[in-house]
Image 1 (cartoon, rainbow, N blue to C red):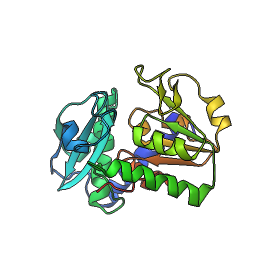
Image 2: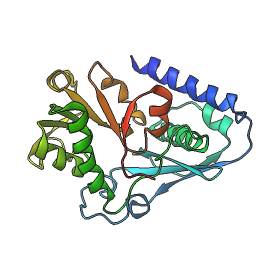
Image 3: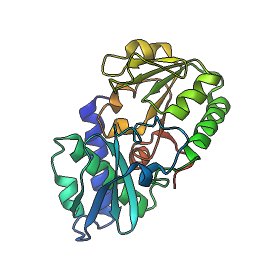
Length: 244
């Protein structure tokens, strides 16, 4: 599926959900803000999570008390009603993050998805350990392509499986992290996808519009809160053990 097809289907599914539930003309304001690192992830032992290093911010939308989130490199605050957000052109990463965070909040409000608020403190470590077991139970001993630098997952997966990783952060590319060389995610990754048995990808790929580059014929597990609503609407596999 190419990028246009994926997002056309996603936007259609979300609009239909909103219309079917009579929410399109709801005047309830959706408010959103960029969370601080401590608000988003608490106090973690590791200090190399991208959000702590300031490379990303977590945007949080609130719809009738239901929270939805999306990671973005263009944080800001926003407010508007659902119709405005659904119909706005998505011209920047910020626009897309607003849309995805709102989609997550509405899907949470309607009970379509859960686990839309990022885990905190020691929970990212617990999540990574649970992911190791989840993969072992479902896929055996696969070669893993990790899309996006998540330090707890990289360390724990690389201790148990053959792993290659790609990332978009120039400060990570070419560096050895937890014994694994970080490859350049901005370049074609066909070689990586041919090599691996399964893909483990950050849900942030839906907000930065790189998701379709990993949606091929290999099993793909997405992790994180950003993909919560999209996973439900597009029937994607998602692992997010400790989020709320």
